[in-house]
Image (cartoon, rainbow over all chains, first blue to last red; front, side, top):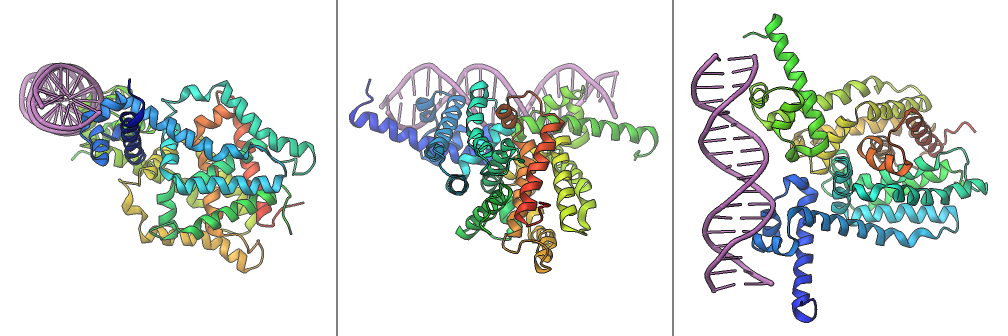
Amino acid sequence: MNQDSSIGSIRLKNRELIIHSAIREFSQKGFSGTTIQAIADRANLPKPNVHYYFGSKDKLYQAVLSHVMSLWDSTLDELTHASEPRTFIEQYIDKKITFSRENPEASRIFAAEILNGAPYIKSRFGGDYHNWFCGRRDIFKQWQTDGVINPDISTDHLLFIIWASTQHYADYEFQVKAALGTRRLNASVYRDATNTLTTLVLAGLGLSQT
Amino acid sequence: MNQDSSIGSIRLKNRELIIHSAIREFSQKGFSGTTIQAIADRANLPKPNVHYYFGSKDKLYQAVLSHVMSLWDSTLDELTHASEPRTFIEQYIDKKITFSRENPEASRIFAAEILNGAPYIKSRFGGDYHNWFCGRRDIFKQWQTDGVINPDISTDHLLFIIWASTQHYADYEFQVKAALGTRRLNASVYRDATNTLTTLVLAGLGLSQT
DNA sequence: GTCTATAGAGTGATAGAC
DNA sequence: GTCTATCACTCTATAGAC
């Protein structure tokens, strides 16, 4: 094999090029609506090269999903160390909104996959996922035990609301644009979104500055 | 024609049967992933009958979208008369969550359509939609002017957060189940969701009972 | 590694008998 | 109105020349 030097770098470069094109196509048309031809065209490559690098449409799609989910992890994993509720929440919401802004297509591919019952990533949503979720949630639960945030709200649903609201700006971007009557979502929209959600969450947890 | 008496009622019954089957298929596989054969099988009809009643896959999908959107309207249009903020918000969130619970497939079909840039319903998201949205938002804006709710939050984004959070339980049902480690979302989950979101919104608007 | 040509499977749609 | 048989087309995938 030749995963070294210049030859390996061609492989890598082409794989990345194809993945990138595939993300755009899959996010816009879904799995079944996307054709290998469209991906190849977008990457300026002949169609068989896509098969050469990824074997099949299924495998390419799985590679795209893996790419998308590792993007997610790399953005949010820095934020596991939770010192103080207020700062943590502010940073968490900000990171999530920023991700939706910078990677809307990644978010939409993931959303479509969940929408259809996660046919390609079911295996990642077993018991381990439940445990991971509990770990995240327990950050908030601990603060409730410590008496520093409102003990009456459900920490499970608090997380769901944050996820839903932040991902909304990627997944429902089209509707948000239409509602606001703008062709593009500029920085101020995302800033207002962040501020509004942060205000609501902090108020609900009894952490308002007022 | 024969849109009267027993013959017309067969037409109507079969159309409804097909629409219902189509909703299930489209919501699970998306537009391109759904086959006429699968819809026909689910309705226990031979494939050509679907074409006989709806002409084409496109037209059937459009009929499904219309059905889904009128479901939405009929559920939420009762709620336009806004007397008092607290009651309005409580009822609005409750209605939205109930809709997600009772019509998750309708919500997912709509979500998939928006996700892909609304290729089949773009026409409904023009200037009229923007005006409709402003009308809904102005209910809250008026309350800000009247000084009965927090004037510092963005009313646009308040609505987005409510929409996102309530639809999340339909669109991301699979992930919610996995996170909670349950096979079914029972009544208490939806009750907790409603309560949590209501608490956050009321607190953010300065309407808490405490 | 790259690309042309094509095989092979599946799908939307319709003709035409009942 | 209902259903069998089939056409026409598209798409994934691969063989094989370069």
